[in-house]
Length: 48
Image 1 (tube, helix red, strand yellow):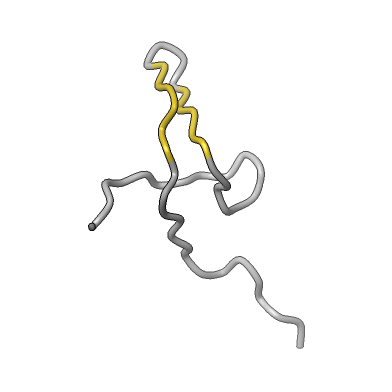
Image 2 (cartoon, rainbow, N blue to C red; image 1 turned 90 degrees about the vertical axis):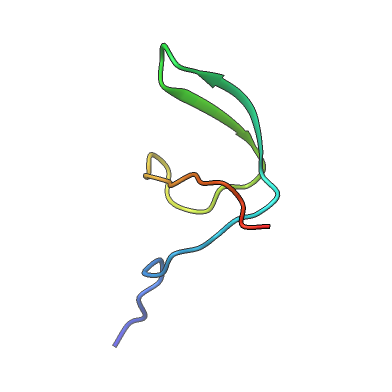
């Protein structure tokens, strides 16, 4: 049977928020964000 890639949650650290535009609901992040194009990501404060 084929594998199930992308089925688990991944946490990416050391990403920097460059700009936030509240009018257009855009958040610009510097760094590699895992996931598919046009996917949904959750952003939270670091635990460290």
